[in-house]
Amino acid sequence: MSWYICEMKLGRRDIRLFAICTVVTLLAGVFRYVDVGDVVPFVVAGGALAALAMLVGVSVEALGDRLGAGATGVLQSGLGNLPELFVCIFALRAGLVDVVQATIVGSILSNVLLVLGLAFIVGGVKNGPQDFGKTQGRSISMLLVLAVGALAIPSLTASLHTPAAGHEVALSNIVSIALLVVFALSLPAALQKQSVEVAGQHHAVTEVEDHDGEHAWPVWFAVVMLAISGVGAAFVSEWFVHALEPAIKAIGISETFAGLVVVAIAGNAIENVVGIQLAARNRADYAVSVILQSPLQVALALAPALVLLSHVVGGSVLTLVFPPLLLAAMILAVVITFVVVFDGESTWLEGVALVAIYGVISAAFWWG
Image 1 (spheres, rainbow, N blue to C red):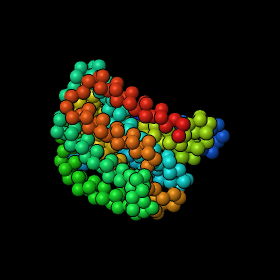
Image 2 (image 1 turned 90 degrees about the vertical axis):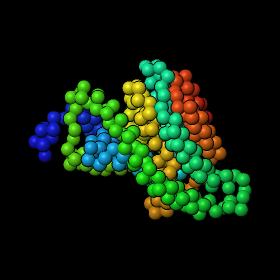
Image 3 (image 1 turned 180 degrees about the horizontal axis):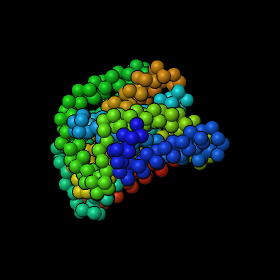
Image 4 (image 1 turned 120 degrees about the vertical axis):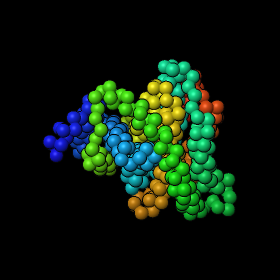
């Protein structure tokens, strides 16, 4: 195998990524069993999650020519949330329901406010006002609003003391099944739509790869890397959750803040980097699509899947009854996103406003 790897002539980006993933993952494993304080294992495990998420993205990207652009886009958006899925499963087994609910909301907020805002800032400062497809942005953001509206129903039934109050578990299961059905039905359209989007994304990334002397991975190598990164994410997620409670006590933050900010940002490393890079290269259409597809999959697939999986993985049962402030922040964020993308144009000032809103919301959860 070493001969084949040498023959591939891995580029500088690949070598750096492999080195970073190997080092931080090994350190996270060592710090899981060696006492180096409460904060260091948490920080290193979070960095390992982000690095493995990047490796998942690069591995799926390498399969693009074989799978087709549409399938690659859907697969990348789905597998990009793999670290978050593992973290949430281990958190549920540990009884950390607040962390899981905050991670779900944080994944949506970090993409539609922080990452989209940073993309607008970088793209606007470098290229001036940027245009992106109105229809595309509106359709994704509208579907996101509808999905979040469905997620909000169990919380509203509980807070408004309706006859459904007290049946939140059953109602959450019904909502989850409905959202998963919508997700499955949306896949054909997403495959067709992303065939154009990912082709443009692949072209943008190829420009940099050619400059850096990168080479395409063989299929077998991309599959092996995808398997290794998936297994690594499972182990690192357990180490991350194990270090979570001691770290938040030492730092003085709440479980909600940790899930809302730390886990969400680390788990969305792919969209964080790729979306901002595409905006910097004046490819606003692809940047908006990549950034908004991730929270859409969180709302339509990740959150419902966690609700149903919580009945079989042990630990706590997850419902879609969110604390009022989390619910309000999620609804506010997606409505703001719809308004911002409605005109099909972005400016750096809009980006600053989005990032500022994200900072204010995050600060509100620092204490709990």
